[in-house]
Length: 241
Length: 292
Ligand SMILES: Nc1ncnc2c1ncn2[C@@H]1O[C@H](COP(=O)(O)OP(=O)(O)O)[C@@H](O)[C@H]1O
Ligand SMILES: [Mg+2]
Image (cartoon, helix red, strand yellow):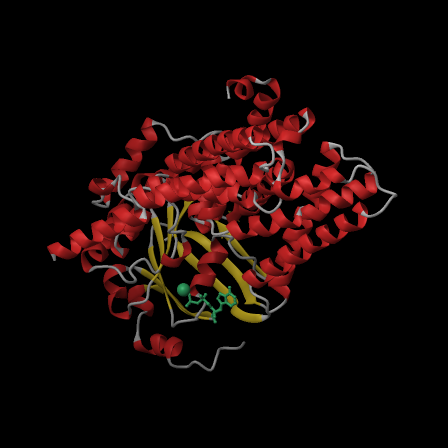
């Protein structure tokens, strides 16, 4: 498969405490890639580096051979739960319409066509009945569906999600995976931080096992084995080069 | 009563306070939702020494000069708060209290210094900036308020979509290429500017109420961002008009307290009767409780 995202020698630290070192990886186009690793392995840090939300010490992140900063519009980011301001008085439709922002002109005002796209996205996530509900009144799973609907409304090629399945109901989990597989058929690429080890093989076709640095990466059937998992989860002493 | 309402002076002063309150209600809603309303309080108090310092240095009470002094001290206060919270173990509320009281104390000290000092003339007007005295507002005061509020509203409208996304979900807004730094700078810049130009009308102590109270009313009546903004703007505008009237009609009532009293009445009524207010909520809870 063709490479879409290339990361070369990425090093990130928080107040001089290293979080990622010598990370080299490539994520194939049109894959469902899982980022797996124990707590504190730097998975969120990796995602935030790709989204240029934090500044690495060094390293290069390219999309289709060009700096990621020029490709942000092609990426839809689904945030982790705690990152949004739940005091904000927004309806479900308001939130999904935010996904249309990247396609708008100067005033960025959504029009009727944008509303239709947003409603379609809500339909895909089986949330159209909730369109006028206050987002803060929804359950964790429903909120996650709304955020995925916003990503769909953005019509991006690359979906980046940080633990989207955490703390949600099983129906939503199945729906998210179904939608992910359907969108892959349409040519989209998924990069998903995933915390359940037992479902990696069912849900993903590519994986990166991470613990501060890359332990293994490649097609799931090639690298998803006990030896690699053990290396990431039980050899916590570190992996200095 | 008709006399006052149709008097040219009253109309121009009321126009100033109303548009100030409308703009403050809107930008204040953003601060309240972002959980930053107390920063406005600290900055509001901290602008007062800026007024006195500008007067001392320039030797004039010209509107623009004093407002620039207030603006400068407001900015300094904001960065002082940032530096204290980032580089010490003092928490945000500690830093706010510290900056608020020390800056305001400095202003009071400077004011008593110039008031007892024969080198400075025309110091009696300075105390108007503590509680606000709209009746003594000059036409130039009103023009400055109109210009600053108009510009603030224009910027807000231009960047409305960006601001909305930023306030709700800063990580997402950053990810789609919105500059969060610019958004934050804009919110703070507008807040400090409105405080600086509104001091003479409302006063340093109470001006934060113009930012917070309308937002609270708006949030009690609606859970749509746009509607909250409209309700906040209307609440601010009506209170400013009524407060200015009360203050102009009754000679010795300062404008700031008069406007704040009207605003507080709105908050109280909303707390009691709004859909999301205390009373309805407790009734609702009881009903739900009975059912289960
Ligand atoms: N903002 C931050 N400041 C300081 N340390 C951080 C910050 N964010 C994460 N870390 C630390 O960096 C390491 C990696 O964190 P993170 O990327 O969130 O891991 P993961 O998502 O894999 O659980 C952890 O040790 C965490 O404590
Ligand atoms: Mg994480």
